[in-house]
Length: 263
View 1: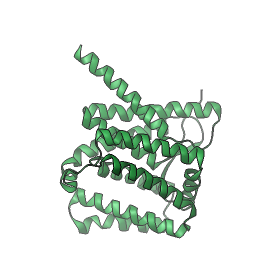
View 2: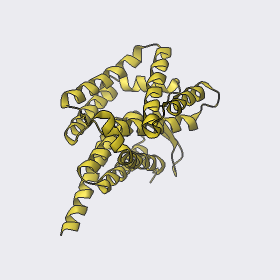
View 3: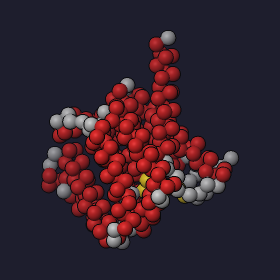
């Protein structure tokens, strides 16, 4: 039976790292956001904005997309570094290094994956505090519906992803599969959702629950890839469905552990 352990491992490790880093930086983030949280209307607006952005990417000139993404990435990179070191003159170096590397001949798959993973960790940790248990559930449901529509319905997600990949922007993580030969990619939106769900699970229950969520989501990708390889379904798929399925599995496993410990 063909299978892959690389992508599931990356998903689990990144998700667990998001949980642990959120715990580390939560006090500073609460001070930064003054303990403000998204309301349901804010979450719906965010999903609509994300969907609109995907549609816009299909039609906007590539140079405009490049400038927009580099600007947004640099801004997030600066903010997160500033939260970590609390010195603006140090924080400003991180976006400068990123832009210089992106525009240089050194830019390749290794750096692309590094900055893609760094970006999804930073944005997940940074945004984790403005969600609550209720709003993250609404966000997960709405984002999954939007993902399914734009992959299977309009096809905008597919076209947008292709354009961004052509620009070599760090919006996906690409890994070689093992032990099966080949390669596979996963969008940062899917990893962002995994991180948010794991953070909120940790906040509602405990750190162990967040870690279990990360492991379970990785296992869901393991099962998904086995099915992909078996049926040879090599095309775009709304991976938010896999993330949500893995997260629900993690909740179930955590619930079983709690029952065993209380009995």
